[in-house]
Length: 153
Image (tube, rainbow, N blue to C red; front, side, top):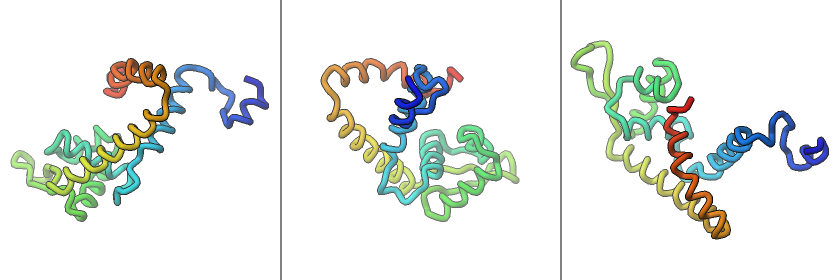
C-alpha cells in the first residue's frame, strides 16, 4: 500500500496489511459499533457487571484478575455497581477482611438488556452482508470464539 493510499484510507503503515493488524482493527471497530448505547454504564462497568453476573459471587481480587485491574480498582468498580443497585456484597465467611460480590436481579437484567441490544446491532450488520460474506463470517465464529477465550495469549 502506498503512503498516499494509506493516508487516504486512514490506515497506518506499520504492518497494516498483516492478518493480525487487520483483525485488531476490525475487532476494535466492531466493538465500538456494537457498544450498547442505551446503557447508563460505561463499557468498563458493563464488562465488570457482566463478569460478576456470569462468574459470581467473586472476591474483588478475583474480579480484578479477570478484568485486568488492581484489587483497589475492582473494589471501586464494585462500590459503584452496588451504589446503582446492580450488585450486592456479602461477607466472606473465610476472611473477615474481604467480601463477595454478586449481581442483583437488576444487574442481571442490565447485562441481558445490553447483550440483546448488541445482538440487534450485530444482526443489522449481518443483514448488510452478502450471502457469501455471511457464510464466511459464520464459518469463522468458532475460531474467533476460541481466540476470545484468551487461551491463546
